[in-house]
Length: 215
Image (tube, rainbow, N blue to C red; front, side, top):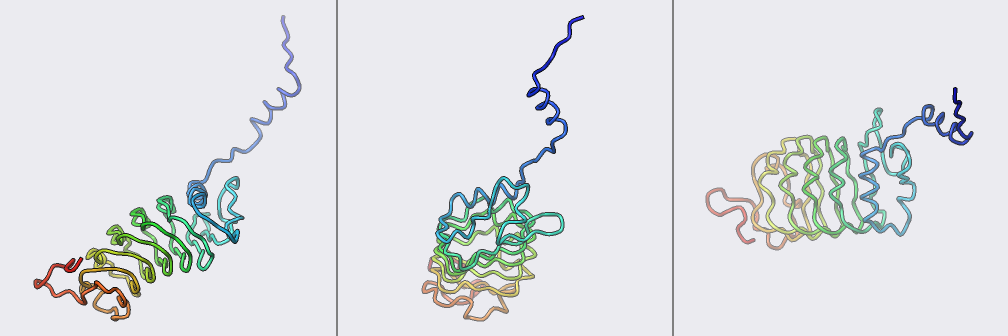
């Protein structure tokens, strides 16, 4: 009978393959790391974002729930610049997106509309441009939307009037045009919410002018 002997190193590897826990990648951690890869972070605010960890719940500025799902991202006033990538749409349990007073640039990704649990979006005082995505109208839990002090343009999407839980809105200091919706929560927002948009023509007069009049 032939007896085969394996080298000790091969035996050790075989044993470890059965005894070592398998660490799977975390989709939310992967999304955040991909987002970070596109950003400039001169103050090293994101230095704790280590993609080798099993989840991002120990990273600074990231808050998770009891099931290790990312529910809050707090990066306000951090001197971060770069695009807000489509990867943000993979944080499907996110409730608070606080990125105010930075230098985020480019367009708001339509993928924000995938984050159905969002309660607050604060992207004020950045360098964002382009249109406000209509997809934000899918965020039925949204209560606070602050996009002021950017370079956003185009009309205010009428679909946002469907956000019945929206309590605070600030779109001031942009380059929005057309008219201001008057339905739904828009009936409660003061003029200051829309101030300093020189091409915005005031409240919508239903039937008298198209909502994008002046765009």
